[in-house]
Image (cartoon, rainbow over all chains, first blue to last red; front, top):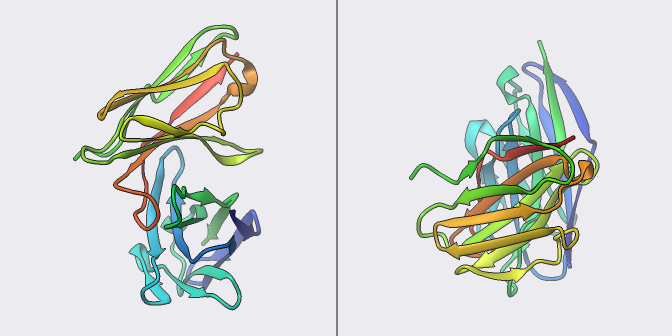
Length: 114
Length: 114
């Protein structure tokens, strides 16, 4: 069984501030971890993924995430928020165990103020 | 490739009517997923196919929902009869394989049942 918990349904930051979106996972086997972004009235788009190579993963639009096995975490960060980053962000977990599918967290809405 | 294509983008129907949502996956992808997104429940996996065969439909809410994949380039999700609580955004996604490869999402179909 696998699950994802995203802390905070809404996160507000000012433009130029650090973005930190939290994700903790639960998996009985080594996980694959993903962050997706959803802009209004759009589908989900992959930001980055961890697939057991480097623990620090860089994605598009300046985002990165670090896999920490000891903390079962995969938090998403960006050093400086931009207005265009305002969207909903989803953390997801999968594995290579049989027919494993993506399990999504509830999502975190990122609000960026000028 | 044009990505995952869903139609229609918006559907408004009366309670009791049959609704059919359509999806064209990315060519070459052998997994296809149907998700439902609501404010209350987030993203839920309804059913997924591998090589046109339904693998897991445990997420289908009830017998009013059915999905088919007659060939590698087309899938439908049907609701008959529709109810107001079926109102949601329905996403189709496809991927090469499970586990470490990401799923690519369509733009979604926003269904409103009145």
